[in-house]
Amino acid sequence: MRKIALIAASLAVLAAPAVAQDTKTTTGTAPAEAKFSTVGKDEMFSSKLKGLNVYNQKDENVGEITDVAIKNNQVDALILSVGGFLGIGERYVAVSPQSVSIRHDTKNDKWVASMNTTKEALKQAPEFKYPK
Image 1 (cartoon, one colour):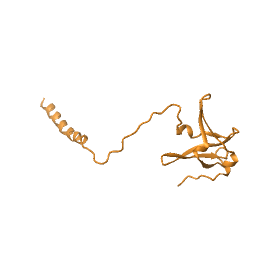
Image 2 (cartoon, helix red, strand yellow; image 1 turned 90 degrees about the horizontal axis):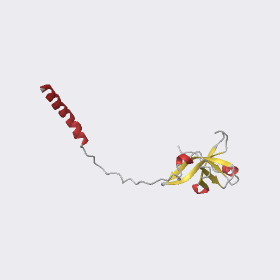
Image 3 (spheres, helix red, strand yellow; image 1 turned 30 degrees about the vertical axis):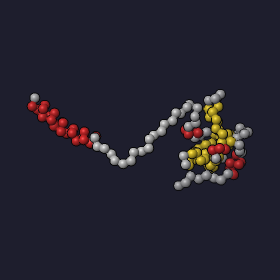
């Protein structure tokens, strides 16, 4: 019985510093309060945007959305991969997000991107190169 009391007392002493560590407070400025949003199933996600083919008014595939550039908390440009075949000879161009129409085709349950341009115009556009 005496051994059990001694073991219990030893465990209480060993546990005391751990309890004291848990009660320490931190100093500094607390972060701003988080704001939450409700997201509907019909909203576009960047995971659906990346890899989306872009078609023109003649239903020709003119490029593929490969990335999104964000500036000042807003989409600044869509990066399109144009030209090339199977990754060979492709180049990138940055286009204004307002120049690309993205909509959900409810009949086929897929996202569709279109742009009023030609393959040739995008091939002649200034090339976008990722900053290093």
